[in-house]
Image (cartoon, rainbow, N blue to C red):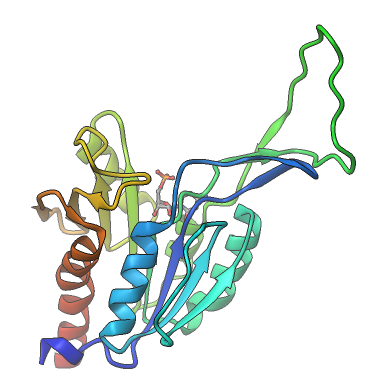
Length: 227
Ligand code: C5P
């Protein structure tokens, strides 16, 4: 049945923000809470999948024994873990809000204030985990990303999907009240490689997780079973 198609499937999920250290007490981060990614991990595990969850710093914990949690802090650490694990996976869902840049240098000691002086921090690009996994992807593996756009949402998300060699991209709406960072609800549009588009209403992140599973993972594994 549709209910046990995920049984034993190996699914990698990234979640949460990354912290990029400036000095021992400061970092550059973002407002991601990890709730969407953790919800996807729990729902996949509830359907019998073997989930590996690579998580940036969050206040969340995992409950299902079918989830292996790997905690990381920075984009680089998340990248190393993800490229190590992805070859053994059937699918990956990348929901982490990875910092695009990090400070070129992390100070060994707490940076001091000099009264009346500006300071600047040079930021250098972080690796793009999604693009790296897109390059590594083998036939039989499914890659799903997220997008959070503020302009030309669908067009930009579709471009991103193609550029990073993803099969689906989940577009988070920022315009809708209750959707996105921090909320317990979300409103998504699923875009597929072949240009299909499915829009959903405002739902709890648990319900959204199940919509994502039912419209991406399940059709993929159903098709795989037949061939
Ligand atoms: O390019 P953009 O950051 O908007 O792409 C978003 C998608 O790419 C998300 O799935 C996000 O998890 C992933 N991503 C990543 N590594 C990065 C940046 C984004 O995996 N360095």
